[in-house]
Image (cartoon, rainbow, N blue to C red; front, side, top):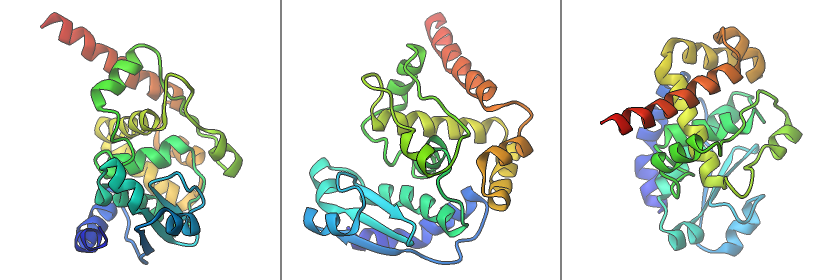
Length: 220
């Protein structure tokens, strides 16, 4: 697992720099744990599969990843997105944004148990995440799935889909958002710089597009 991550690292760094719009000036310390005891020592949340802490370390829970048959490189890529923002001094932004960026850049890392199709069905049924621009440590901790409709994999998947929508719908505005975030260190300020519509309007636009897909499929 450590060898796979090491071999993929140059490509992953390039992917992060291209998608995030800036250079990775430093690299994280990477700890790959083969036992739960090892991971419990390094991680703040023992139940997680991978974690990035502000001390610039990425910890990989090898035992959990092997047990759940998940992709370590994919999860590491997700964490490398977090590390990028830490290295820019951008911490505790809205959880949907941080996790959504990680899912998007890793092609689904962290959301493996929920497909795009399943997330679309949930959104059409009204079981959605609730994006906000509120940032800060306490706000980050309290932004979580709403049980029983959403679990963490669903939360991550919907967040990643919204990030992809923002990118694909208007790549220029999305680039401006990331540029502004590097400068302001605050997503709320950056959003007002990059977008004319507020977050709620953009989320509703995203939801309507998914609902429209269902209508088109029914017509076929």
